[in-house]
Image 1: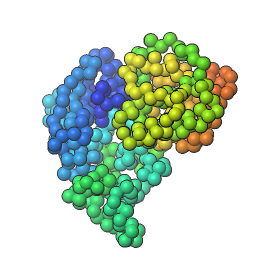
Image 2: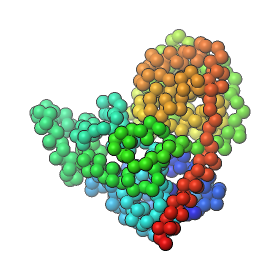
Image 3: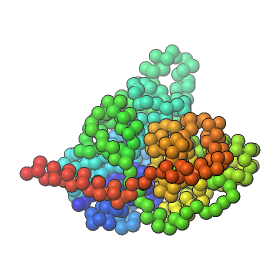
Image 4: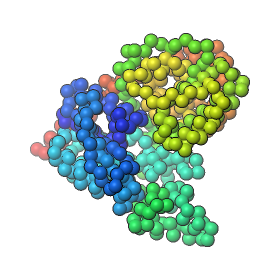
Length: 452
């Protein structure tokens, strides 16, 4: 089959869970003999124009086309984040050029959801993997600007108030207008692109009623919708996204596991973090716990932080300040996937302190090396980690609770071994690809019958 994957980004330029999964499944399908291509976002904030062309390259035998968009230069930045006619026009021509038998979207956050309308217009079967909460939330992660979790059941003003809370116009209008007046003013302004594309409004204000309507519409387009987390499926259904959603746990490329020789002996417990260095991932919660623990445990525990520390400089500066004087905290940067065996060999336990309803792949990669996980008792994390079975859970954002769980690992002899025994087997990328092949084949056969 000729298969086109559409993703928000792709390796090696972009490194996160969705990109890693897309590369793994695309690679496995290529090895199975399918003709696979990837279309994704490239540079996102660079360039003099909104559209800055595309770059073709090849990643491990997979042709990749990266579209360079400067979202800030769009005539209607907020709308084009979810409904971009420029990308839609390009994709329409691209589909006619490569003639795929099927399109699989793992994320269209950068290219916008308008790509789904284009695929439907060209009468091509479409599979959608739901990898976050972007269809429900302009912030993507259902994490409100006040730091609290959101259930997604909102009216347009709730979403606009959330995204606009940090803007000057919101703060100033609050000083001179009653609440209903603030709502009326900002709602009206958010519908005028000549205003919302100006600095101070851009990225903070947009027509949330239009977004909600459009996202609900496009969600009904795919022939098949897949999601790895039962929690994520349920919350979409609760929000009225009641088109069928299949539970489809991620498969994992564990080729690196061949080089895994077990844990490197250490006199200290090595606690690791692997992921995006962003506030929503809760790295600051882990560092605060590290500061508490160093006072009582000293050299008995080390903290290894893996991720791109330069991606969010302001947050990185905060983390570096928090770690001042903590000799047991190391910022280890990012690593090529081939080095995963080495990284996990140094790690006795992985901590996933996310503040949102995360369902990260890294938990299962840790499990593949029998590494127990301490995670936030929230969303997909609490689905994967069973407390005192294959890991430990702590209350969201609760530093004292996280300290307690890490202390338990250090102080209780045999606990790590007990948790290792409870770790389940990990689904391979080969199994995942075989399952997807069946889905693709069914859609292809259905498409052929419809044409006849």
